[in-house]
Picture (cartoon, rainbow, N blue to C red):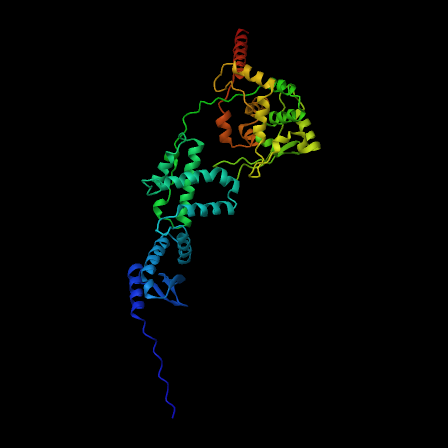
Length: 429
């Protein structure tokens, strides 16, 4: 006679398992539980709507893991309270262990490296931009964090970085504070750094404001450009100066030119803190200085026929980071040695500054002249001119919105006097 088998009762959980589960419930709540998965702890969270989420922790299924489990659960719960799911919080916590020293302190060097990878590998910035602009500021940040008394939160860190140097509102201070804030956000959001390192939303108190600028813009006159071109024997440099004057180029842009129908196409991207990817390539209309009518069309034809060979080879030197940035320096060097340019500088310096127009002739004065020519001779709007020159309307207005020189003043006076004289004649009739 066969006897029915007695059902096997599930083995009772060891006392340490009960203790671990009770401790977890007491810390995190009823919805948190653990079980054994191939010798490791699986943590499961049941939400109010009945859904569950689980992760397997790098902790052995043993009573000795209870303290580590509770510490992990506490950190996960804090991250989830910020709107993250269990899996996302677990990934973030795992990442944070890489950015923590053996003593339990935040490993800022590891966070900086993680930040670098995120910026460069995402294509947000180039590796060269990191080395040139970000790395020096990250070095300042790491030094500030290691200097006693050590900063205890984002505000004390940013305040210490203010003391590194740079005038209020200067580009140097602005970059330092902005890059530090980016790093701190990355530390909190991607490396599970303590929330006290979250930077304030308003950085202006740390960046400061520039005092009203007293820098005067000096415009090259068209007749000065004519004299300068006549005084250049080297045909390649004569072409280079002609391009800068007729198309309002930055010196560095000489290495990035190509013809495009009746336009000059410039591929250079000027990178700024506000626009890290750089300004957009642009098509430029040539505006011939008075006395040089047809020069821009001739230059475009020459560029079409000869390519870069029509310009000095020094404009195309590549630096160790693979960028062509030498043209601006090469242009400045060439002009500094040119006798006609030297004479023009002396003559300009002898004229008194008028209004916001200065008397210090520099290579950029030919670019400034393009802006004046666009407005005064061609009647272009500020928005149109800003687009041709490759900067924002705000930048254009800041540099040229209030610029006026003696010649413009005298022309305005003559026009006003002519109106008064005409009205007097009309009144006598």
